[in-house]
Image (cartoon, rainbow, N blue to C red; front, top):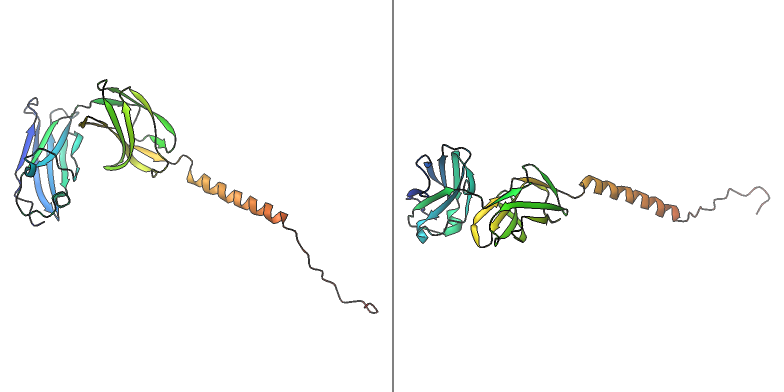
Length: 244
């Protein structure tokens, strides 16, 4: 991709927001095939967060770009030195014309509130755990996905908006940290909520599994060995004088 620059950056807020909310684009650069934008998200209320999405002029700013990471998406907190990385070549292929980019933002209001999940909690694979929430409409069908960071690990299915369910993390999920649930409305994927990050551990510690295997192996070997008949060789000394 020879050229994806000649970028015009536009910032749009919903008409309901006041002038005390603004974004300051501080830098735009190309790094290999990627476009990197940095910005400051300013609000007099530091407890607010925003939904931030990046668009381009190819489709007349209709759909947000997909190959994007960083401070983009839902629940972006107020603050400085925000970064958006767009893998433009992965999304567009070889592209020789200039284009415009547009950042759209609006105040983030979660459509449901998750209950009972705190940052740093530990969930064990293969064990059922309560999953609770409040809010939403009665006809909401919730889609629940398991993420590690920004990577989708496993879809966990769909739930009716009853306010509670039982979830199980599959045994095939690798142990690790920075896991979180993503909950979205099946009919409106712009309505998204993420849980606080948590840790996934094995149902049983690996050390116990290995130790049990070694103990069993040694015991089995002892039993098997004890059942093997011992054929002692008949070792006779030299005949006494006169014995043939």
